[in-house]
Image (tube, rainbow, N blue to C red; front, side, top):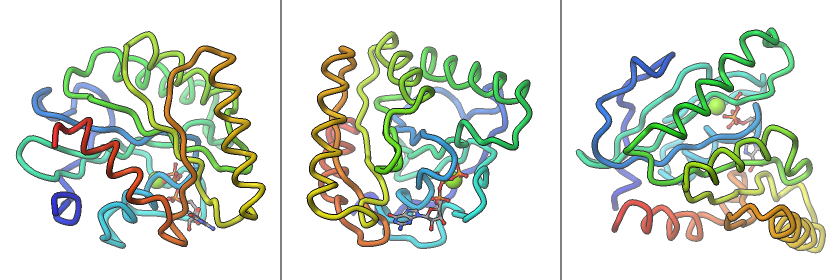
Length: 196
Ligand code: GTP
Ligand code: MG
């Protein structure tokens, strides 16, 4: 299966270093420590594919994981990492916005948010940029293993309500890399975006 054959295919620190803009890619974005790299590992079933860390800000480059000649997953650096100087934060935000707006290959955005702290300011910013770019978004409420079944359900509903109210289109689900739960649901979305 496609996702299980993913392999690391290079990194970029700025947009000019990105691979050629052809084919299809799906990007994983979210605040530092939200679980982006872990999710990529869970989805591919390859534990050490994307580097994860207890220290927020681990992923500082745009990392490409190729699935086949046409398709790739992109692990984006987390935003909102407290220890990064304000100037660098702003620069990274501009880079992100431009990537979302201009990247032709980008078919969808997986937005990860810790299920205990969903929809923070910059998450909403990302959702707005994606909306402007007509880019479909699928939200993963991560680390759902930290919530009881009931709390997970009510968080899911609350986030859906908030998105409706703000008129921000996105699908939402609970996800846990620890429990490996929610994988099939994500794959279904990726398959659609990747035209599979
Ligand atoms: P940056 O690269 O710094 O932006 O972080 P990231 O979003 O890639 O997060 P990463 O996958 O490195 O995970 C951050 C921390 O959260 C690590 O200590 C992970 O082990 C932990 N973590 C990730 N997913 C889960 C999960 O589903 N459940 C629990 N309990 N912990 C998780
Ligand atoms: Mg990471």
